[in-house]
Length: 377
Image (cartoon, rainbow, N blue to C red; front, top):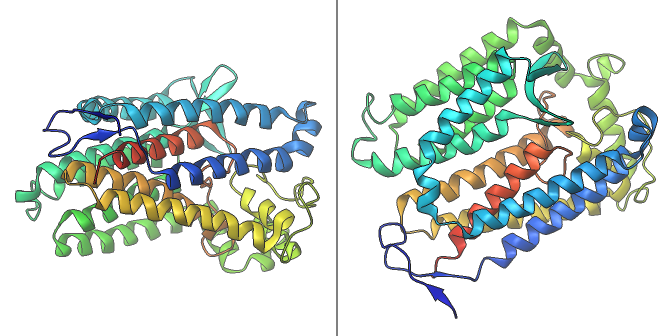
């Protein structure tokens, strides 16, 4: 097997190989391919009705997929010490992007929130970059502060302040769900990083309290909460989207109505090609199709966590764990929303939902895992 010698400080006692984890790669490619097919199926009617081009969203998603695959390849074969040197510059750049989204004309509003930067005919969602930047920062922090991780001023406060700064900018957009996502990343990485359980428990209690305060003080968040609790009681108003999603799953049966034969995407189900694309999968491919998506995601996440645990370098281990969490949290939250187990929130399904920012970041996470898997065991 061909090997390349590497710096012992980055890859201690090991050599790096050109062989990668094929399970991770095949699962990722399968999900990307399935996403392209489902975006074409779910978006065609809307694209033709409003833009006069049936394949508009499919063509854009195909471009995103090509860019994502290039990013995946670069991430898989770039030396990790290069990534690690960019931890703080990328974190600062992410904070700047979130700020630019809020205060400049480059940030545009959709659905009552300014969460995107307009780049010509395309858009960028800085939240996706914030997930990666936070994981790289936390991986660096917990791998270098293990001797002081139990202390408040050194081991607990800095990551809370950094995550808090990112969350504050997200809440100003407003993007409550994005802030919750980053808080989950912080909590789960801190949990395995050795942070005092007293501090974690206290912060969890305070976080839940602050979250409920933000929900109770916002009329539209209250409406989303009540829609989640009783969607059919508000089926023509706040519960409409969830009800249509449940109708889609209910009509799919074991093997679905057939690819392209779904009815909910005929302008009944809002965001059918975006956050609720899994409902289209359920309607057109049935229980079997949804199960295949779950199997591919499950295998990918299992191999991701396994790869992280196999690392000797603490920073590599935290990095692998963190990027796998990005995919895992996104998938779980999306499934929970479309199945009515969590309040409606715009969380894309990794690899499947339409959108360049999410797809490219998901591919980057897979590329990092492939990079880590190249370590000879």
